[in-house]
Length: 264
Length: 74
Image (cartoon, rainbow over all chains, first blue to last red; front, side, top):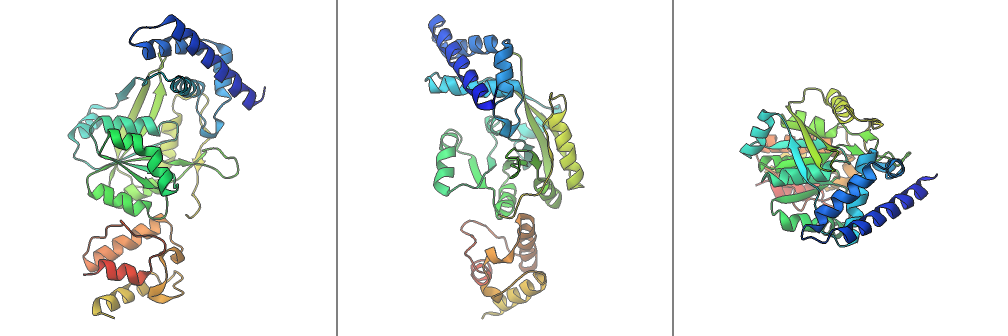
């Protein structure tokens, strides 16, 4: 079965389950009930899990991540209000650091976790600067307008030759930086390369850095796992450590290697 | 050219000795061939040398080194 067919089949299964769940659940908390029904049914379905594993290969999600994204997209398309439950898991010292809201921090993640990580940081009350793909200004504004409206402390810095200087300004203002270190390999079209630039940036500014990834629980909730804070002495070694962190306990592991993005 | 701008030019010529400066101070930022880490180094060096704080709002590829100096040097 090719990937396009797998994607279509998965979407059809999710749509069908969501519609079925809507017929069964007409309470006030319909979004929660529909999600629970759909997730619990499809998570145990081998065909759905397999189809999910064949989709969105660009970002290398595992089957649970791909299935969750699909369910959330279909629910949104059907006009169902629902937000996946999220948890934050970190050492007490890291929690204390976040709760203090005082220390400028760099939080590095990958493309399958950066939106949840960013929202988790915003929910902690931190002023967050997100490093985003360099898009035309109007498109960038439109894409992040809903987040900016909900969180006034949210800012976006486009990924270009000026981004690290702007991130230095953000740190100087006591802001927290959220940055996905992986980027697209032009040859394979997958997010399989990890840039050491953000680690080198942290080293040069002697800034504290947290590594972050998200895990999907059996019940479909999302756990953001934070590791650190780290002080960087060797950017390449830290980039390798980040790849190991992302892949720890992950089956199958993401195919990630160190790379340098082309000049903007 | 003010003394401050002359100092800036001297500093740039020293700091950017291995970079292309086809038009001297009129070289655009985009023509320097800098990646984001190089540019960070340059900005930090200018700030240290001239004891200033540079805010990158409004800075873009079209800005020349001269315009940059005029804007940020007091």
